[in-house]
Amino acid sequence: MPSTPEEWLAVANDFYTKWNFPNCVGAMDGKHVVLQAPMNSGSEFYNYKGTFSIVLFAVVDADYNFQFIDVGVQGRISDGGVFRHTSFHQKLVSNGLNLPANRPLPGKNSPVPFVFVGDEAFPLTNRIMKPFSGVHNRGTPKRNFNYRLSRARRVVENVFGISSAVFRVLRKPMLLEPEKATIVTSCVAFLDNFLRRNSASRNIYTPQGTFDQEGPDGNVILGNWRQEDDPQNAFMQLRVMPRRAAEAVQQIRNEFLDFFVDNHI
Image (tube, rainbow, N blue to C red):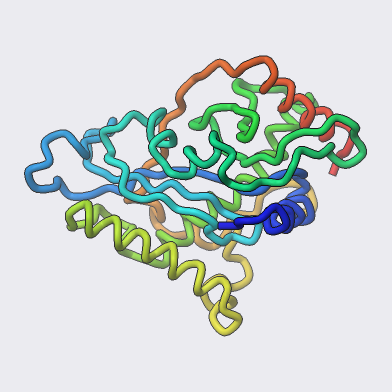
């Protein structure tokens, strides 16, 4: 994970260049990794779907690499509490990530924080941007914001999907105890990064057409990994946990919304 403001700025530059989302330093998501019933665990790993699981939380950069992972939170913990149990959350709320100082969005005057993008399962905070809830008409500012956020967040969805499509151990419930399953899941993330960052294996591991792409009309061309039969069979999405954000936090999101209204990319 980046450790200096300069390294975070390089990540933000990639997100703006590739996904047109400024001041973004990562896309994050979490998945339940399904297990067989662990021995003598009672309900400790029993999740809302009636299966057993540990949780993989990840932050991904604009080039489909894991920046941070946290694996092993018990499936019984409410999905609203999963994120709070990660070391990433602790560093985020304590300003321990060494993120760059707030700066205005391009062409704007009001400084805003550098943020991570997530889906509806995460809280809206001064450091986390999530979509506006509900259905919004085509051409409206909120729909435009949600579209732009979805483009940036899609990288983490692709990383999870490709990992489970290639590493078949993630395609079905793991027949391992939670401690071993945590090690295996962590190894998958490390191997994914190695294969993506190694010039000799990068195009073999993720050849052209692997990732979702956008066609000239703006429609999404689905990546090859989605053609697999149920490629995320052993992954379960975190549930949406409705929350009311503070007015100041909503204002930060509105700054991004205004930027996207002024910049139709």
